[in-house]
Length: 554
Image 1 (cartoon, rainbow, N blue to C red):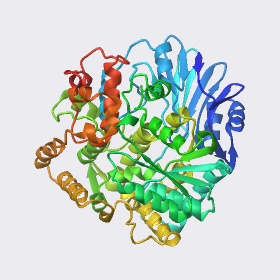
Image 2: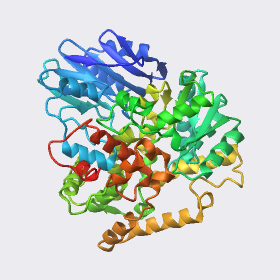
Image 3: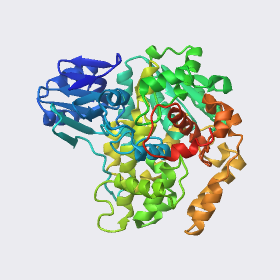
Image 4: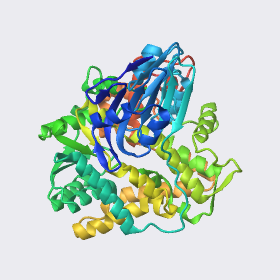
């Protein structure tokens, strides 16, 4: 049995290794205290009982004479990987597990799905032998590798409530969550990523409401975001009395990735399960230039569970039932859109079947139609289990750059709150948006020159018209929708390389030589990185895949 963890963020107490901290029965346990509590558990069942009461962001390994248990928090903020081959191999580095314990090479199906989603769904990775611990899961491996058991100590399963969310009760849970952030910060500066959206704005408003004024907000402007985002972020910070930092990028910030700090991050964080967010290296340089010391702050981001609701169209609220095909189409178009696969291709048929396998057990088992609340719940469970922990959360990247990170809107109490709420309030993040607007009015007075984030007033007419066209295209019935969608997604401006500095991780000649998909410009930089790693020989497949088609001309 071999265990390998790296970095100062891991603490050992006897047989236990812990990264992160948690609130337990209302008390904040730092890494040392949490490791001591984990070390005192006698078996996986007792460990599960302990973690079922924990609220925080952590990963842990508990090694006993006859077995080893691995667990991650309710959102898998810090991943763990394992392989059982000639021995048992465990690490927070998928690459270490693969290089040390893998025997069967890389999986072409997982690779193609990765190309479409930006992560490897399920417990798989690019390596045939390496598995990952899933959110809220405890994996126990026998010392001889003869048995593997996987159990949930946490499972997000929204049920249906016919009662609308009580705004006061929701605000109270939010205040408690931000209160835990304040306790965790313990007087340190809160470094808040503040956009023009509702999530980070809500955190800023609650920090102000709770009297925590040691806050530095920063707003990033990237090529796929409106320039007004900087003005909105600065305006919010100014009204709340917070210091504000603007971050803008240009081509010089993204030199070719060879021998760069971005490549160091890829090597440190790894790539076998999800795209490393190399943009954070540039962000770190900009923050350092503004005088921000990573060791002196708690980096706070507005990621939250209701992100699933932003992907569900409003017409969902009006339907009593949702069929399997419609839900599958939503999942595919919204989360498998990084790479274009023809509808009749073998790859697409295979990946669509795998995608539906990741839906919660029981959904559509009785037929092809489910009541809308159950279907929405299934979609949200998929988002929590797959996209949120593997595509959204980037704690490893920030740790590599020296930051401590906390996610107040992913507080476990908010998960419990939303499990018993009406799905109408979750679709489109309605309750969160309404709460943010109300608090904005109470605290800031909602200045007339600042429209609510996402409103047509805060965007150009051209952007609003284009978004409306997207909505119309998505609303078209089949078979007309398939033809029009193909034409819509075929449209893109080929000058994206000049307009988005993030693409400069490769040369313009390399970019032009790639058979890149169209229509997903905002995420194309992630696809380019994965293709670059493949071309450089970081991984290879025994059969031809979409990677080969993309790089056929390079």
